[in-house]
Amino acid sequence: MAKEANLTESLKKLEEIVEWFESQGEVDVEKGIEKVKEGVKLIKASRERLKKVENEFEEVKKELEEGTEAE
Image (tube, rainbow, N blue to C red):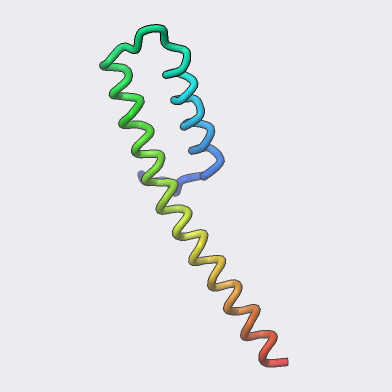
């Protein structure tokens, strides 16, 4: 994905996919596979974004600890 994943948007889209599956009496296999592929892309992008957020959090935490030690 060219654009960085927005976790809130990704979760909404994943919920929509789940709702789509739940609302189907009989699942169209072709559409179902498309939805699964879309879900996999969203999950992968979300995992990558979560790693970046975790790293950012650790950097901020480290800066805070270093700032506290300097005092």
